Image (cartoon, rainbow, N blue to C red; front, side, top):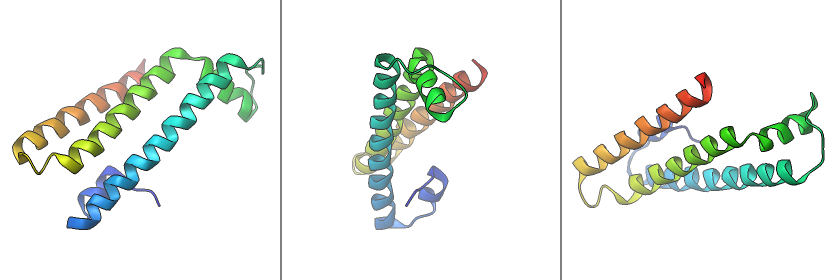
Length: 115
């Protein structure tokens, strides 16, 4: 089951908490996969090529992209944590924090796409 940030905003009450938790679990899983690809890319002697494994090795060897993806993943986890625990304190402060996180995510995606 996957959720996008748009679908989370339409879920009422208790379901949105479950959706945020599921989003964070998936993000942690994919972050682990990214770290594994990075380690394999650096340690493996597999040549970078046109085959899928070669493309993964090339991605793992690209420090800039991997670092940006890890930053994006960390921001996604932070978004989930603020979304879960923020509303109990202050809704305005939570909205501000979530907005700043999203702006940071958009900036990182812009750097990834346009260099």
